[in-house]
Image 1 (cartoon, one colour):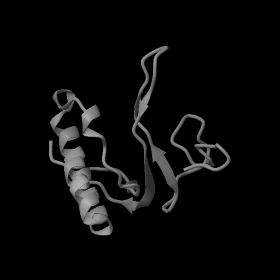
Image 2 (tube, helix red, strand yellow):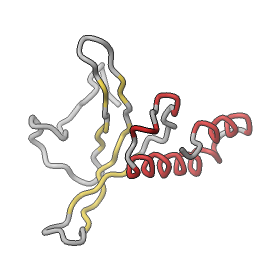
Image 3 (cartoon, one colour):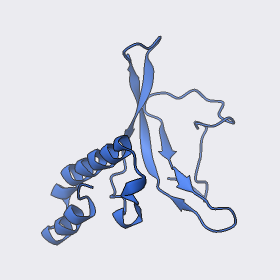
Image 4 (tube, one colour):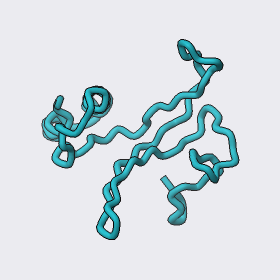
Length: 122
């Protein structure tokens, strides 16, 4: 996402510099990364759409939510499964299940074989 080399064209953002309230339909990027000082960076990036407010059990008010709208497999060769928590492992498996279900029917047989391998359960 981005225009004219602007990766984060706002005005919405989740940052201390953000000045615009999030509203349903806005799109943001979710990009956790790892940047060893003075070396390199690895960033996994998905686009998220802001969803309608919903009640959360025990919450004091309704909260907005996010839905991932880019569906590309995470390269499992870059994942050290031993470092993942059970929650993180479950999230990745659910994400890959969704990628297979939604992208699989849109690709050919050869690509579907690759997709199945790329999104296997860990």
